[in-house]
Image 1 (cartoon, rainbow, N blue to C red):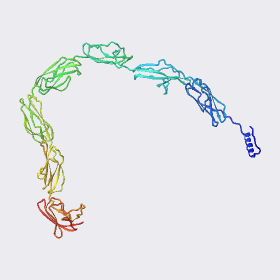
Image 2: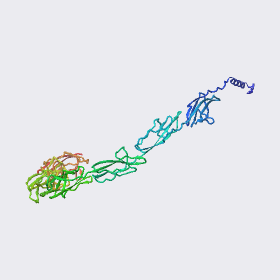
Image 3: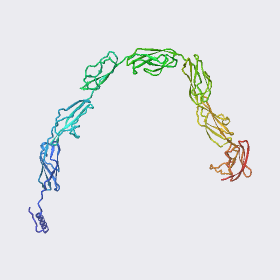
Image 4: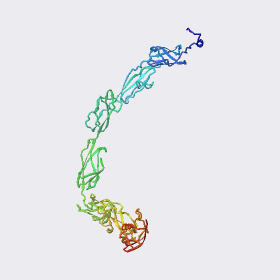
Length: 615
């Protein structure tokens, strides 16, 4: 470097001298220390190589070289995915800070080969549903078993598949060598559904009958003598009918190499019964019953087909009996029986019995009546002589009558009642003849409400029935109080004097009930007047009129002024005087009233006094 300095410029000379001094005393540029490399140096084939360089130098930049790097790689972390064996070797990194570069740092990276998949002698296992299975096997080092082709957590315990449910299940296995896991090998387990049992039909024969070989619907049938174990046969067995009893046979079918469960066939050999009928009596009264029984070798579980004559019916019992049978027709009657032991039938057996005729006596009674009404009960013409009558009046009270009637009977409560009669001839009681009567309750005639209790003669009082039924007829009495108004629940009566008020109710069946209440009516002859009134139109005390509790008949009611001039006159209590005369409002002051009236007790009263008109 050549500096040309002008000595004539003293200021510039000083600057140059200072610059040369700085150059003389400036130190040399320092080289940074080699970087530190961290990270795993051993990998399995296919993994990602990851190395990280670090340095304390200011503003460092890095440079990498190695067998897995194409060209130059910069950056603190070296990442190479999909490692291969060709990437084995030494990897170096340098750091540059400013204009200086460090010496390189090196590490040796080793890539191990991925092992091959394990060897399995059997890739596919086939089972029938419900059979025993074996543990899965494979040959390799450090085996791991999976249920998915990728992902998941493996187990070193080899699985044992189940054959409970039909279908296909996949298992996977890998081996690990030098810490590297191989790809997974797939093993398939197929479970074939167990076929349904063959369709079979149970058979039954009568003892000693000809039998056919057993039959079932299915493929590749195998016949057995037991429900499990034993050797099967392709030949269907033939039941032996020599002895009565039950035997069991079993059969399976095989589909796709899998045998079904065994179906059971029941073979029943039934005995043939005999039949005999015995009875509790050689004869029976008409409409009466006797007991019949079977006698023979048949058991209770056989079917007993009894045939009865017309008019006969079974009251109770079944099967072998005792069978209680009622006979409605007189004469010689025949009963027959066939015993059927599951298709093996006995010969027909008949039994004859004498049925004695019974007397018939009709009962006469009307169909409807009221509580406590006396009802006539009588009988009609009997078909033969009757020795004895037996009556049942269903709780009714007999007022008169005996033997063949007629009777007078009362029932005190409502409801349906049955009158029964049994006639006896020659020791045979007839069928009880019955007839019914409907006893109707008396209607509800209670007086439920009276609108007033402090009553003056001539007052209108409302009376209300406690309950109202539109189907009944309601009548309030005495008629002079209520007029001709009928059939209403609430009626107004004008009480003329003290006495009873009656409510008479009649139902649709003519049943009548009555209730009454005592009404005390006072004469109530007093009349009162206020001593002042204010006819100012405010709706309060605007009229001067008499105040009475009773129903007086006003003869005359008048108002006069101090000069005796009549300002108001009326024959009624209302509306009263409004303080006007000929439409003109009268002055405040004192006025005079006079009233004459007839009271409910028949007497005439007079009253007079002063009143004050106030505004």
